[in-house]
Image 1 (cartoon, helix red, strand yellow):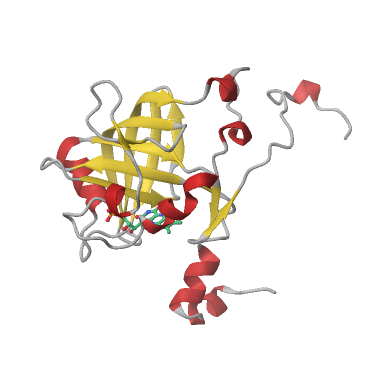
Image 2 (cartoon, rainbow, N blue to C red):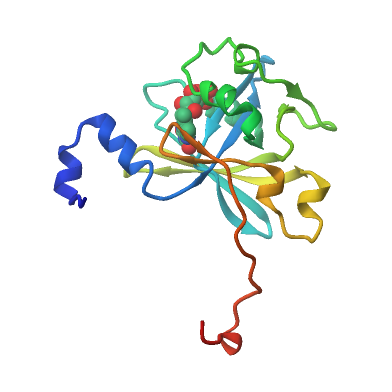
Length: 208
Ligand SMILES: Cc1cc2nc3c(=O)[nH]c(=O)nc-3n(C[C@H](O)[C@H](O)[C@H](O)COP(=O)(O)O)c2cc1C
């Protein structure tokens, strides 16, 4: 199969959405959890989390347009600047997936989707207890992407909690953590580590 830009533009909304959401390959599967200043918690699945830099330790994620639809994650982050990013694991992919439904602002997806809030130290936003790999984030910057009215939210890492065994040789093993990946908007994959290579130096490149 081969699709041109013109073919893509003629696709139905759903067909295009499914195809284009898959072409970047496996995306990270995360639950982003927040709390409003009124104390209502929120948790939703996001596949757009990206690494932006290690020093300072920055992660970004993309929020869909906020003009016509209330985006609780975005609003809560703007309110108190705190959020958590929690890897999704096979035991709770289904619960995680259903956090994407459009629940009322006053309803916590933690309750409806049967996920457990966990508070670590004095960090304001809830972590997801079922996840063994979680990150506490402080909001730093929101960049409007005018091409499609999405917003890139940038935050700095303040806490990382992960299983000891997955970081034993100072190289995070995502097969050990059992973090899953996402393709499109509704398929979840397990990850298998197939190789680890040293830092690539030109002088060390040999014939393969
Ligand atoms: C697999 C999957 C990945 C998603 N990734 C994103 C994403 O990266 N950005 C986004 O804005 N919405 C994403 N969504 C949609 C949100 O989960 C959904 O809009 C949710 O209702 C947002 O919750 P909120 O309004 O409480 O913030 C994704 C949905 C699914 C099912």
